Each structure stands twice: as structure tokens, then as C-alpha cells.
Length: 113
Length: 114
Image 1 (cartoon, rainbow over the protein chains, first blue to last red):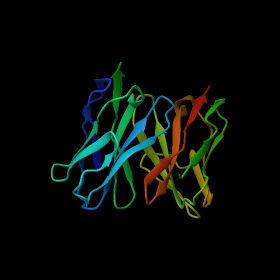
Image 2: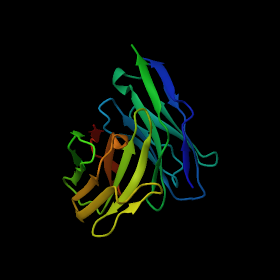
Image 3: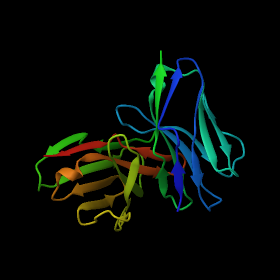
Image 4: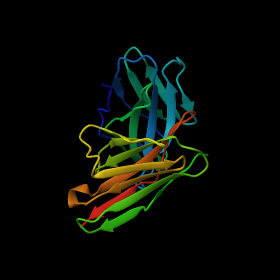
């Protein structure tokens, strides 16, 4: 079974600084997708970034980028120039080739003004 | 962009009654929708996968007779919590599979059973 692990329950970052959130996963599949979702206090799930496992190039979306290490089964999220609006719960997620979706336990990010 | 509308956003019901939560895809057809449950400060736990025109697939440990799922059209899936009890109080979220994007989520429903 696939599992997604986020080892950092809480993280904090100074405004304008950079923070990296960790995520590891376990799978025997070769074809899958990885995601980072943000859940602010409103609890609406917002897609931050996604990565296809077959792509070697790390995905980037403005201030958000990932470090995808397929062999190590690691998928970390880097937030650059952190803003107050980035404060939220961040969930790493794995989608299998069969469209089953697994979430990590989440990392609560605090941005310090 | 693809939007999933979920309502009600908050519902309070008496113990023993049933509550229906709706999830609609507004500008696309969703052949597959998913229902999640989230306890405070915890992750989303998949409850079931809802397929249009067929029976839902429930995750292990989820009571199918208690959490009735209907996906009668390509734009609507419903979750009915039957004979609700206080332990059913939780945050329920639906999502739809978009092949180009992954998943898009509804805004969630906070259920409080008193």
C-alpha cells in the first residue's frame, strides 16, 4: 500500500524568507503523480503544485518549487519569499495510476511578520 | 477553471436524523468523485469513490449503510449520513478527478450532530 509521510507537523518561516517542507512516500508503482495542496483556515483545498513521476524536471509555480527525488521517494516543497498569505496547512499527496489518492498528515506553516 | 460546489457548508442536526451533502461540478462532467472526512488538525481520509451510474466503492472500515453515496448524474454526487450520531461530527469534503489537473475540491461541509 502507498503511504505518504510528512515528518514536520509544524514549521515557521520569517516573512520574505525561504522554507522547505518535507514529504516522503512509499510505492511500488512507476507511474504516479505527486501534489502539494494548501488548506488555509477556510479549509478549502487549494492545489499548489503537481509533479508527474515520469518527468525528471522539478515542477515550479512562481514562488513554489519542488525537489523531486524519485529514487529516494522524496518530494519536498520549497516556498521562496514567504508571504503572510502562505500560512496554512500543507498536505503532500500521492495519486496512483489507478487514481487512488493518499494524503500525508500535513504540515502547519506559520509565517512570522 | 473547474469548480466543485459543495453544500451545505455547515449543518447542525439532531442525533438520529439523516443529513444529505451535495457536491456539484459546475463547468465540467465528473465521472468520478471522491468523499473525504477530516477530523480537526488531521489529514483527509478517503471514505469512498463515487462513480456515475454505478455503486460507490468504499474504503475499508467505512460503513456503506451509514454513508450512502449516490452519483446519479455526471455533475452531482451526494453523501447522506444516515441516523447521525455525535461521533459522525466532522468535516466532509468532496473532490472530482480532473485528468489534466489532478483533483479539484469542494469547500467542505462541517457537520455537527447534537
